[in-house]
Length: 288
Length: 288
Image (spheres, helix red, strand yellow):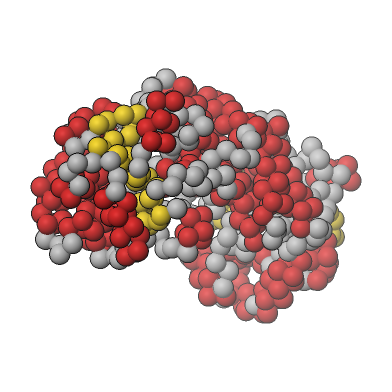
C-alpha cells in the first residue's frame, strides 16, 4: 500500500526524536535529519511506509554506529512476556472458544510496539489484554479462517515485534492443537530493524517447537515482497493460508494478491483509524 | 536564529494537517506535501524557522488558490478581543504598577496564535490572562527597559498576531502615557501570512491612535531582516528601543545585533522550553 502524507510527518517526528535521544552531537544530528528529508524527497510515491521507515532506521543505525540499537529492548520484552506465558495459556483455556481466545491474545500482544512511543508498562499490557479479550472478532472471518485451515497443508505466520511474539506462540500452539497435520512456518524480518522479530527472537521464545522459522531477507518493519528474498517469496506464494500480524505487515501486503491472507493487528495510527473506521487499539481481523 | 530539527518535523506535521483540512483532492494534497519536503531538503541550514514557515504557507496558499486563508479568523479574533478592550484597561489600572501590568497583558495576548493549534475559547484566553498576570517579570529587564525608553526618542514595536494586537495596543497606550514625547512605530507583516497582523488589522483595532503603522515587506511569520524591505530595515536600525513580540520575531531576530531590543512572548514550543529552561506558556521578557 502506498504511504500516506500522514506517514511522512509521523516518521520525520519519530526520526527527530530518535536523533535527539541517540546522537549527542547536534551538528551530526542535523546532518542526519537533513539527509533523511532529502531521501524522503527523492522517493517514489508508490513506496510503502515501512519501506521508508526501513531507510530512516538504516540512516539512524549508521549515524549511531550501532547495527541493532534495540537489541536490549527486544531481549527485555521477550523475557517479560515469557513470564506471562503460563498465565496466557490459562486465560486462553478459560474461554468457551479457546481458538477465538488465542486469536484475541495474539492481537493484544500487538500493543508491544514501541515505534510510536506507547506506554508499555506491565499494567498497560494487562489492560490491553483485558480490553482486547472483551472485543468481538468478526464471526464470518473466523469461520472462513477455520475453513481455510482445515483445507490447508501449509500455513505461514508473519511475525511482528519482539515480546509480542510470545503471544503469537500461544496462538500458533492453539492452531497446532486444532490442526495437528498442518505444516507451519513462522517468518521474521531478515535483519534487525526497530523492535521487530528476528530469527534469534523466535528461537529465544521457543517458536521452533511449533513452527519452522524462516526470515524474509529484509530490514524493513513490514513484508515488502518487492525486496524480500526469493526463498521467502516462494514460501509466501506456496502457503495455503497466511496470518499477517501487525500494522507494518498490513501496510506492505494489503492488496498484494495472496488468496488466503488474514490480517491481524491493533489499529494504531490515526491514518488507519480513518481508513478502517476504527478507534485506537481496535482489534482488526480482516480477510482480504 | 538557525532553525532546529524539531521545527522541521513540527512544520511538516502542521503542513500535512492544513493540507488535509483545506485541499479536498488527495492527489493534489500529496503533490503539495512532496513539494514541501523537496523544498525543505533544498534549504540552506542557516535559514530561520519562520522563513521556512513562510515558504510552506506560500505553497499552501497557492494550492488552495486563496491569497489570505485566515482573513476571517483574523477578523473574528480582532473583533472578539476588541470586546475585551475596556476590561483590559481596567485590569491594568487595578495594579499597583500599571506599566508592568501592561507588559504582562501584552504577553498574555500572545496566546492568540493558532499556528500550533491551541484552544482559543474565551475561557482559555481569560485563563491565560490570569496566569500571565500572576507571573513575575524580571525586575532588571523592566528597569532597563524603562531607562532605555526614558532616553529614547523613537520606539519600534514589532507586532505578531491578529487579536493579540488588541493587547499590544493596551501596552503601547501605557507606554504613551508614561513617555508622551516618544515617537512610536508599530510594524506589521508585509503581506498576509497565517494569522499574523497586517497593516489592515492594525488600523481596524485603532493602533494608529498611538503609533505610526508600518509593514516589514515580507510574508514571513517573523522579522527576517535579510528579506525585509529597505524602508523597514531603516526604521529598525534607527529605532532607539524595540519590543519584539512573539516567538516568530524572537526566532528571526535573536542575535541580529540591535543594541536595545527586548523580546516579549509566551514560550510555546518544546524546543524553546528546552533552550530557555521554561515551561509551556511561561512569560519571556528578555533583553538581548
